[in-house]
Amino acid sequence: MSRKQALLARHRRNKRRVLLAGLVLMLLAGVLIAWWLPLPLLLLAWVAHEAWFADHLFYSPGDDYAYSFDSDAELAGVSLSGDLLQVTERLEAADTLILAVDVKASWLGRLLDPYVQLLGTELGDRQTFERGVDGLRYVNLSGFADELNQGRLQVRGRFCRIVGEPRLWRFQHPDFTQHTVMVIAPHADDAELAAYGLYSRAASSWIVTVTAGEIEAEHYQAMGLVPAEAARLKGRLRAWDSLAVPRWAGVPAKQCVQLGYFCLQLPAMQAAPEQPCGSREADMADIRPFRQLNPFALPADADGAPTWNNLVADLRELLQRAQPDVLVMPHASIDPHPDHICAQAAVLQALQGLAHQPRYLLGYANHLHDNDRWPMGSAGEGVALPPFFDARERLVPCSLPVSADVQMDKAMALGMMHDLQPPAPFKRRVRRWLQVVLAGRRWPATGENEFFRKAVRRHELFWRKDL
Image 1: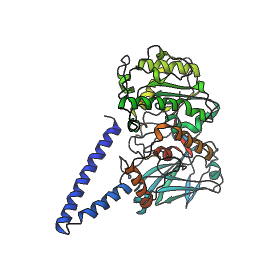
Image 2: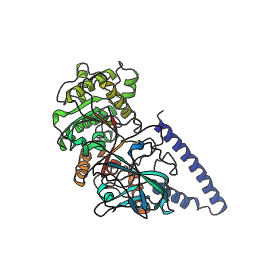
Image 3: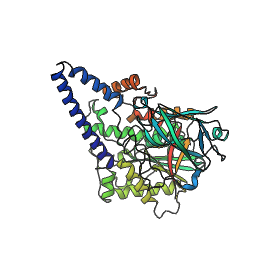
Image 4: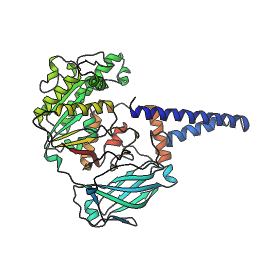
């Protein structure tokens, strides 16, 4: 069982205990006060759960995030005078700027999402944190260098207050858009979620999608297809998406590749590198049907076997052909999805012994271990650093700007992805309505899937490692 699965199991177990205790109290109220009382109490409890307690948060809002950054990146002479953030060193517009502050929620910040508001003369932003937050958090000030240089940036808490002394780190990076970028996407839409802003502006981009993403095809079963047929159709559609949607961003067809391996089978492939691992749901053991639109042949086309050795050979061929300077792929310490972890491992294995090595590795996280809502807040807002609790690992954040125009293009790219198109279930729509009315939350008009809120932001956040 993965760490995220263990956290989810513990969360559900604790929720069942709370529900059982609540039911007992309601029954006692019915016996001791009035027989009809449990019914309205049950309704109120359900409304409260949907409005305020339905988030999957597997840590205490009072826990400090535990990042460990290079001490050389920390700036001296940083202070918060009232709401005004003061710095003594001159900052560059392209710097990634991370501000550590202690955030303490007010009583309203336990019912409404608390956020830190950034106010400059020309720019503004808000970055949202957990309800009831009471600990160290990291605000992303990237893009506010000019406002800071001119002493005009105000940092305010809304439904929370900022306490203690702030700390500011500056991370300087090259302009990655001037290089050849290769994005490794474990599934169709991962490249767009994590890096559409980067790859749409890069001098040259390659999009490599590892799996067809054929499982969990209930939407297509509802059209009258049996499970295996539905899974095959979903895989074909997502394979098409992975090749077609990057064209929206100007990526040439000859630089979009679908490898066609089967969803959630990468861990089994890695465990037995020579053993083929067929699809869980599509009744398939040949990856070639999902690869037939590729612009050129790859090693695994010879036998179509879904093996780890074939995956590594495919990736080696692509790395040699593209010779990317910047390699973008999941960060295994932050993103817990098993396919994401294994995709990174396969790329690192494929790199061994190659004459050309990328200069930079950028890791991304489309999923988290312990907070399914991150980035919190609304679409279009900035991306604060995610919860992270292992100070032993040194991380180098890299925040790249995404303009309003590119955000809209990114939202439209996500809208083309078949997996993000089905309407939200009725229960989720009711929950969202309650959260809008009672908790002040907002969802974008661009799409119902949660990723339209989480991924379309003014930053794309990566973690840099030089190879």
